Image 1: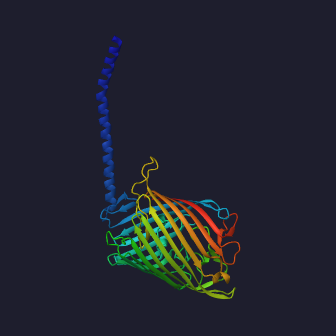
Image 2: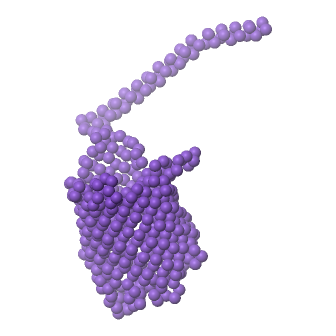
Image 3: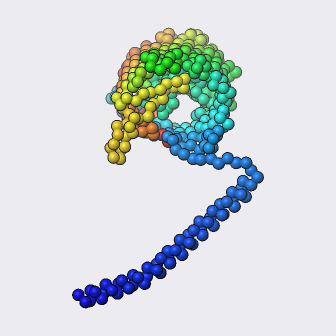
Length: 466
């Protein structure tokens, strides 16, 4: 016992003797650290003085609000740094020549901003498949009713086509080129009038596609004129059952003089299933005198329910083939209608610039399995008809009539992540082809191509945006 008491006394003496020394050492270290911090601060201030002396500068702040922003405090200048990744998995029916595959559907970096509160810009590049410049434009806002935009962009035609890729309702749109426009280069004036219930659009574009396709600018002297009116007549009438009604009329007109092989007619036509073609060109030497488009749309939103219907027509004048010795007019029509319901109560938005998905009422946490996210069920029917004479006279090969049936389930975890699951069925009748009316496969697949009457696909997509 005495030994334990003596050991305790000895330990207490050692602790009492060391504590002042430890305290003194910590104080010295803290003082040294404070001196270093002050020296770094002095160095930083000197660097600022040397760099910005006699220069007027405005500091910028960085923050996150579902996008990464750089902005001046007065928000007169700001820029969003964005990007997205779409990763697809697709399974096809036993008759298809399309292989089950994994695909990086989209991989993009996107810079958007505003200078002086009236100059907007967007610079977007695609890195999936072959890299190319996508959206590259500047928009000058003189007033709400008058904007001037120039560069490479989507011409204002078809709300389905105008919906941004992160906001798409199905894996693929129900219509495609040449019924719709593609990215193009040109000028566009637009604005909001009638208390922002009507958006008007008028533009002039090459009609040939992107700079990537025709690097010198265009394929001929002719240009496409584009016009569009998007009207929400009851937009400002709170509580009205028609508040969510949206109407749209649109059209394009332009001389062609030549097939635009890269983006429009020369590629054939396919929609809903990206790897299939409803028809392809059999006449290799065909030319087109002019191409006009017309469209009418109706969109309606009532709480979690959405309905969209688009009737689009493309008309060709003087399709000529010297080899076949024929000269024909022709047209394609598409009527695409879809409905959607959010099981968790969210509500979509739609405008002149396409559909926009809502944020979930409660985010889903995949780590702790908390929250529901936003759950949506969808269904779509599209009928596409092409002039039958173009097939019987050997200009086109494939089906003059294709029906598309799609059902989908979407699960949005949070504003950055969304999953899409779609089942798509195509039914087409061949005109001069006993094998079938829909072309599956491609030259890139081991088994080549095959014409089938029906095509089935199940597709899963992960959308990640930042």
